[in-house]
Length: 214
Image (tube, rainbow, N blue to C red):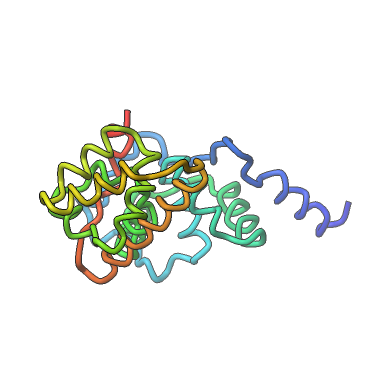
């Protein structure tokens, strides 16, 4: 087997499969993840870390569902490259991990990870600011396929007139398919992300999502 064939086979062997977990970087025996805070001067420059290694560190640092979501937006070659980088990493220094994640957070983790169900964790004032009367029909269809606590959260957050209007749309919805409500949830989520980009609203921190949804 030549070197090219061997490399291709190795990369294919490490492609992420549905439900599979990434190998997590070893922080080293006895390593303290907060050690970087004690010695900030020892933290590596984020600019000196190769982009591919940055991507690998981010993916192994996030929970599996978020890693899979991020990979879904990459083409096949990019997935192969970053998965190969993950496979060859044998140690992630806590200080290096900290600076990479800090950069990643500043580039929009909240926007990237926001999904419709995260409305359950938003402040009422943020939901009021996010709701637009012209989008009421889309909101109603999106909420029709959501869990009762989420519907109650949104309706309770709106002012009286907006809440009554949305309730009327919900009551007057005809038959719909699950795929229709899923599309509506994606559309509403994207409109909310745009408002976030414009500085109109804030989005919840993706950490702690499981504690709220359980």
